[in-house]
Length: 386
Ligand SMILES: Cc1cc2nc3c(=O)[nH]c(=O)nc-3n(C[C@H](O)[C@H](O)[C@H](O)COP(=O)(O)OP(=O)(O)OC[C@H]3O[C@@H](n4cnc5c(N)ncnc54)[C@H](O)[C@@H]3O)c2cc1C
Image (tube, rainbow, N blue to C red; front, side, top):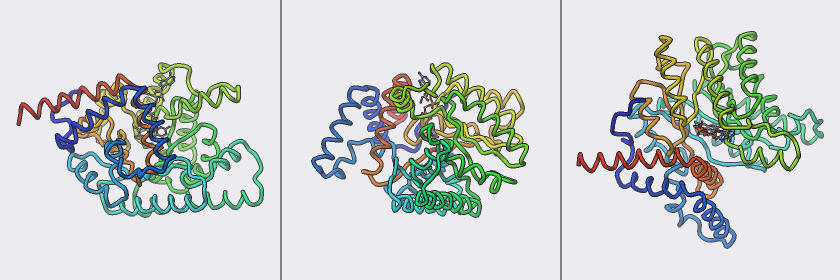
C-alpha cells in the first residue's frame, strides 16, 4: 500500500516522541515482563497508582477516563475520516453489580454514537455483562441450578437491551470474542438476536477468531445460515488474542489446543475467511480487523480487481487505537471505511487491557519495530518541513 505523508496527523510532535519511546520499550519483552511485576508490586503496597498515569502507556492506548473525555481525540481522528468505537476497557468482571454497570456503560456509548457520525459502532465484551462460568457451563450443555438460571436470564436480557438500543440508534453493535471455551455459551444468547435484529440491515456483528482451527467452517456455516434464514451476517474477522491462555489451558487439561499449530496455518485461515467475506459482500457485512498489512493490501487489491469500491458500506477496516495508526490513515486516505477501537476507562480498570496490549506488542517484535520506523520517519519529515 502506498503511504503518503504525513502519517500521524492526530498527534503532536511531543506525543509522537512519547509514542516512539513507549514502542521502543514494548519491543523488549524482558522490560515488559519486569514492568508487569513492578506494577503488581506497587498495587500490593497500595501505591497511589493515579500518579503513574504518564508511565503506563495509558495515553498511548486509551483515549480518556469516560465517554466525554474521549471526544477531543475521536473528533480529531474523524477530521481525517478515521472513525471510532468507544470500548469500555475491562477484563473479566465477576459481580452482578459490575455486569449491570458495564451494560450501562455500553448503553452510554450507544447513546453517544446515536447522533455522532464519528462513532458508527458500539462494542460489548460478553464477560463484561455476564458470568464467564455460566457461558462455559451452557456452552458445554450442562444444566444450570435454579439460581444460575435466573442469572442466565438476566444476561439474556442485557444482550437484548443492548441490541434493541443499537437498532434504535442505528449503530452497529459488535460482540467481541474471548476464550474459546465460552464461545458456544455466548452464541446461545447472541445468535437468536441476529435473526431478530439483522433482518434487513446489520445491527449486530459477531467476532470470528480465525486462529481457532474450526472457525473457518463456523464462519462459512454462519454465512449459509444467514442466507437460509434471511438475515444479514455481521462479522468482525480477527486472528485471536488469547493464544497463550488457550495453550496453557489445553496443556493443563491435556486436551488438544484449539489454536492452529502455526502462524502460517492461522494466516491461511484468515485469508480464506477474507475471501468468503468478499464473495458475500453484496449481502453480508464484514469488518477486516487486523494490523496485518499484507491482508489489508490483499483486500484492497481484491476490490480493485473485482470492481468493488473500497467505500462499499458492507466493508470496514479496523485497527486498535495507538497501534498501526499509519495503516488506518492510509486506508482513510484511499477512501476506505475505517475505524479505530478506542478503549477508555479509569486507569486501574484499564491496566489488564494495557498489559494484554503490551505483551502483544512485545511478542510481535517486527511489527513494533515497523511502528517505530514509521514514527521516526514522520518525526524526520516534520523536522525537515518545520
Ligand atoms: C479492531 C480489532 C478488534 C479486535 N477484536 C478482537 C476480539 O474481539 N477478540 C480477539 O480475540 N482478538 C481481537 N483482536 C486482536 C486480534 O485477534 C489479534 O490478536 C491482533 O490483531 C494481532 O493480529 P493481526 O491479525 O493484527 O496481526 P498478525 O501479526 O498478522 O497476527 C498475529 C496473530 O497471529 C496469531 N498467531 C501468532 N503466532 C501464531 C502461532 N504460532 N500459531 C498460530 N497462530 C499464531 C495470533 O492470533 C496473533 O495474535 C482485535 C484486533 C483488532 C485490530
